[in-house]
Image (cartoon, rainbow, N blue to C red; front, side, top):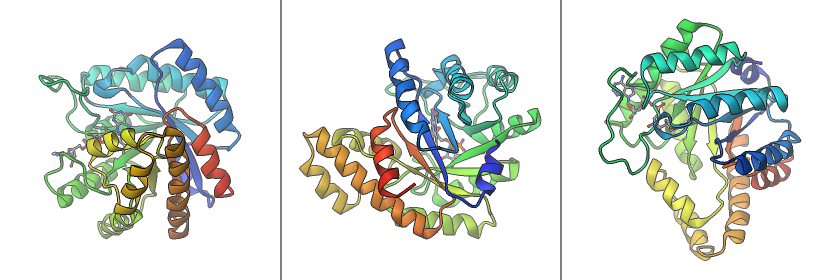
Length: 287
Ligand SMILES: Cc1cc2nc3c(=O)[nH]c(=O)nc-3n(C[C@H](O)[C@H](O)[C@H](O)COP(=O)(O)OP(=O)(O)OC[C@H]3O[C@@H](n4cnc5c(N)ncnc54)[C@H](O)[C@@H]3O)c2cc1C
């Protein structure tokens, strides 16, 4: 089923994101986690594309396996960085051959820590070009990324919103947001996006915290704020990952309760390939 149809249903659209594991053992573990996630009856699962386009084959193969073997609807992440236009087109062709209809078109990030990194000379520069390319291919339902707290490289909030509008005008059907821990940031973003006349579903990306250090690393990379109250709670679990997981479940449950009350079209969980927290949050929410 296509993203556009999934989000047109009246019920909350639950989706869960995975990343391609580096090893065979990691992949085996992932499929065990997916079996647990499957019991939550998600509308679709998605698989990330490694930084700098580094997991091209793996991402497409994993998406295909989840689709065929697990019988789950899928969305493939595809980024423009680190590959030529022809390489990106080859991925679109492969997705089409495999019958994958849903994708999220992204700018992508350069590989972490690579100081002399340069964009591909024959690559697309921005996600909007990939949206246009996928629309021209035909048959894809395309999501794009949204940044409630503004993309770190954006010139301004206004320009970031303007470029979002370009992606929507190019044919995107849904916006999935970067993680955030303050729902007010999401509410303000929705208001600003609606002011531009954009009526698409704006799906909040929710990250259940798994450890204090990890959350500090993620938020510093994507420039999401840690609210003062969460910061106080994080300090208490600094060296206790088990307690951090429980904090993550409790915090995300409260966050999702607020978001559902607000009327979000769906929840997109950044699972980090772990089912435990997503399952616990959905249980708390009676989903
Ligand atoms: C739901 C979600 C899933 C993600 N999955 C992945 C993944 O699988 N792999 C991965 O590597 N990363 C992923 N990311 C991260 C994302 O790729 C990065 O944050 C990236 O830097 C921005 O992506 P974008 O699609 O918004 O890019 P773009 O839309 O290209 O925007 C990037 C920056 O350029 C600016 N901009 C956009 N268009 C123009 C233009 N025409 N002219 C000038 N400036 C412009 C924007 O304001 C923004 O600052 C994901 C993010 C989200 C929210």
